[in-house]
Length: 418
Image (tube, rainbow, N blue to C red; front, side):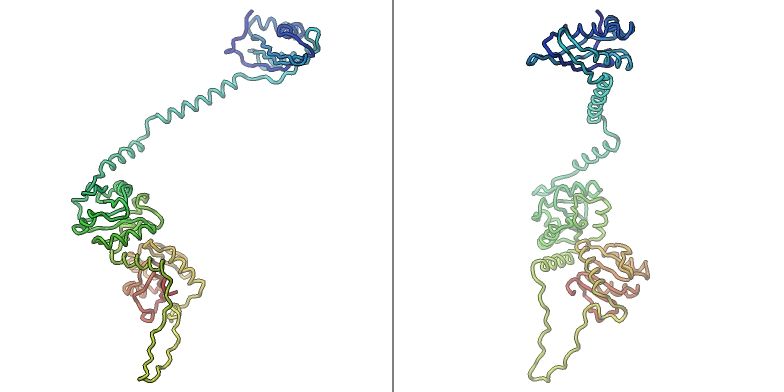
C-alpha cells in the first residue's frame, strides 16, 4: 500500500476522538475506512487515495482511563485545500467504533508549508546574523581601525616615569599636558602629537622638567577635578597657559572642533590660578559681611554723613534694570562658570551669539551696535569697558571687575557684588 511521504505532505488533519469503551488502534482505523466508504464518491475514497499516495499513513494515538478511550487522529494529505477539508469533515460522521459509541471532532487542518516557511525564516535570520558578524567590514570601518591602531602605536613612554606621550614631544616647542592616556589617544586622533599625560592628578617630575624648557599648556577636564589639577600643577611647574574642556566634558571624549575651540580660549596660568583660588574660596567660606572702616578721630571734627551708596545697577544714568532681569543675568553667569565663554544679549535679554572670552572685543568691533548686555566668565577689564562704550553696550556682567562702576556709564554686575 502506498503512502504519502512526510516530505510531500501539504496538510495534516488533526482530530480528537472520545470512545465510550475500550478499543484498540486497528478498530479506530477500520472505522475510519469503513464508515466513510462510498460517502464521498470514487475520487475521494480513502483506500484509493492512500493507495495512490495522496493520503498518507493514518496515525492514531489513544489512551484508556476508567473504561473510556480518548486520543488523537493525524491524517497527512497532499490533496488541495478543498478536498482535504472534505476528508476532515467526513471524520466527524463516525458515531460508533466496534460496540462502543464514539465522537470525533476535527480540531484543525495544519498547513505544513507554513511551519516549514517559519523554520526557513528563523534559520535564515540566524545565518544572516552569523554572516554579518563574520563578514568583511566596510571601507570606513577598515580605515578607522587602521587609524586607531596607528595612533596607539604612536604613543610613546616618555621620561623615567614612562608617561604616555605623543611622538613629537622632543621636537615641539609647545606641549600639551593632559591627565591620562585616553586623553593623549584622543588628541592623537585629532592630529595633536605633542601631548603628554600625568597619569593621574599628581604632577610627575618629568612634567616639571619639561615646563622649564618648553611652552606648556595645561589641558584639563571641564569639571571640579580639572580645577584642582590647575591649582596643584601651576604651583609645582612653570605652566604658561591653561585650557579647559567644555563644562561637564572630559578631554578624552570631546571632538576635534571642541579641542580647537578650547585651545583658542586658553588663558594665562596666572589668571587661571587666580580664578581657581577664588572659586575654591567661594565654595569653602561664607561670604564675609563688608563693613566700612571707621574714620572717627577725636582730634578732628565729626565727619559729615555720606550719602547712601546706590546698588551696582543704580549707578548708571543711561539705563536701569529690575530684579527679574538681574536674576536672569546672574543665572546666565552661573551657567557660564568654567566655560571661558561669553553671551551677547539684545534689549530683551535674548542671546544674539556666544563667543570665547578672548573674542569679546573683536566681536564688538565687528558688530558695531545692537548689543545690549554681555555676560561672560571672566574679569571686567578697562579694555573691555572702552570697547563696550564705543559699541553702546548698556551692561557688563562678569565674575569680578577691575573698574570702579562710578568711572563708566556702563552698568556693571559681578558675582561677588549682588
